[in-house]
Image 1 (cartoon, helix red, strand yellow):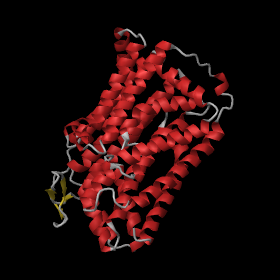
Image 2 (cartoon, rainbow, N blue to C red):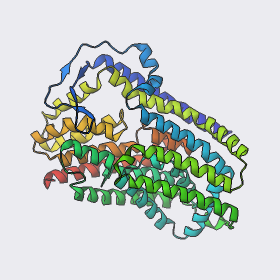
Image 3 (tube, helix red, strand yellow):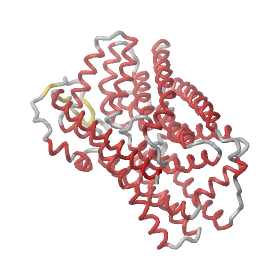
Image 4 (cartoon, rainbow, N blue to C red):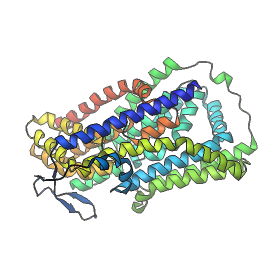
Length: 461
């Protein structure tokens, strides 16, 4: 009962935070004048800002109150709504399949098996998992796709004697850090370099250095925290007995997941798959849930009943996702997002050279609060910040790295990111508690990555 009350309180808190943000955004539309950059269609068929034309203020009617009020619904019909809908479907599929998987004891069996095997090498396992999740983010741009794995990793860490935050650090924070360093991330580095007119995935050496440094920092922070919360006798309580039925179901579950991950990995080389990674993940988890539960001898009627019950349990999170997405919609509809970008560009021309690259980092961090899509921000930011930076003899490569840092790290800290909300919701974790756990790493990482950018400026990267 207490846990249920805590969950309701956590949900209401998130609801209030997002509603306040919606109000503040709406107020901003009356303070900031409307304006726009001219757009053109590039060779790849994408709409980008025309840097040969000047920004202009325009007379534009303020956003009607009813449109603001209904923005969480109207956002579903706006440009880029496919991603929002896909994330919601992913949430429903996860909720609908995790219930039956738990009821069949498949997830518990898998966790018990891994815990029993690695019980005496817990910290090596943490180091390995952090590396794997960071590589998924850095090499193929996985982020939303790892959501189904987060509850499994969290459960594993709890079983090994740690807590839910170690699990979130090993999985969610790790993939966000990898996404940020972007060694070969096609959705941030790839898109941005193409827009900036530099060879795709060039300048990789500093991104590799960044990856190694961030990996080391995250691992150190996690191990220090894990040693503090570790329950020394956790493994001694694990009793694992091999069950042929669950072994077969678990193997099927892992094989289907592996095939899905390989398809997502191949999207880095097979271009047409890049538009379908979210669909692949949705189908992967749906098929894995149905097949493995069938092999565990769960009747289909029981599966549907358990699935429906769990879908109802995750539906409230859909409202949070729509409210978070509506913030960008409000700014776009009021024609104030371009004006914000214009003011930032103007400000950059009046500050010292070494602070320009840090200001670009700050712009990306601020925009991430409103626009979680890395590709969408690239189309918005890169055509503006690269010409500004070049006025100060700052290379496009360093601009792109600053943009990637600003885009990725904040993914796992801002309450407007649906992936973070989903991950916390699936693990019954309050956002405030999560921030207490992660803020020290976030601050140290912020200063370290700013130092990397200044180093890049110094060596002429």
